[in-house]
Image 1 (tube, rainbow, N blue to C red):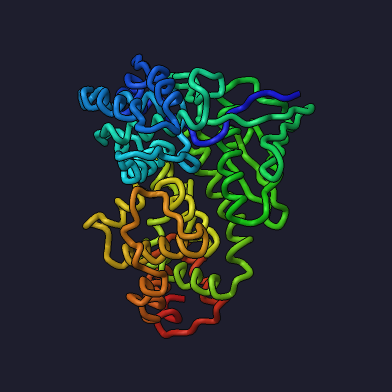
Image 2: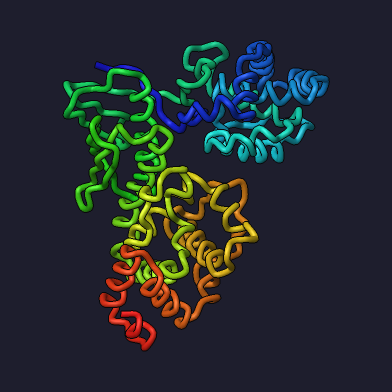
Length: 425
């Protein structure tokens, strides 16, 4: 049968125990519950589209300008939450009012909202022009008041994403999406019985769907296990295992990490140039605990067992990719922290540039790209072959047993020889 599901990133993270106590969550919840005459604003614009001199356009701006700043901020959040925003196909109206700059700012703000960077997004003071862009965007997508227009306002702990997907259920199998975006989820222990689990599954679907586009070939099958607290990617089989005992606030990060193994297989593994560069980055990461810049546990607030970027070049790739895609602002904060060692920062810039240019087609998921003028080559120019040897020697001398084993394996595989390495052995 066909039922309606939800897809895309949730408006609020699922770790709602922390969210309820946060000022950001309280501000968002208060804003989306307030009543604004949004449908009247939308109806006025709908009647006015294509007409000159766009009286509703000017009238709306006048209304917004007479709102207090707090009211404008709340109205913006209300529109985004209750109507959804899709800026890619919105045609701004003609007339004397230039909204292009406001549209660019709105795109950045909506991206922060979707990426769950709530403190950054909620700290913005919305202008009248930005509110008008939101109205045109919402009006372009759906008729005001229609069931498909955005989604109903909700409070934690059951967030509802901004779009719906189709789910076809057959026995213990659910096919999510349509056409090339279809992914089959298998439930050997039976279908989920609560909406929270379906929410986690559809979040996972959205990540897999979007990263499949980057890979060029699809992970088409996912096995869901209610009795496991880990996930895994099956190399060469384009399939994934996902345990539902994983903490809810880790699901998207975990799926992104596993899908990054898929990106490695598709984009890096058979590209000698990329693989050589990644091996160099990996060797530099092993010493002096530089790999911590990619360690998953630093981004999802769990035990140090969550990530193991020191295991191999591929694991470093998967961990840093998850940080780059899911936690860009936190990653940038670490890179820009004065207490971060200079060499660790330089390695992070090199990894950032590598991901942006060779994996994510130039896309960044942060509010800005402070390293836009950097390439992985220019970032690596700050290191020498001596630095690589020093890093491996430090890993052998001072690393944990796992790090020492990884460094030893790398040295043997690449047939490296140096007195410092020999002494360390």
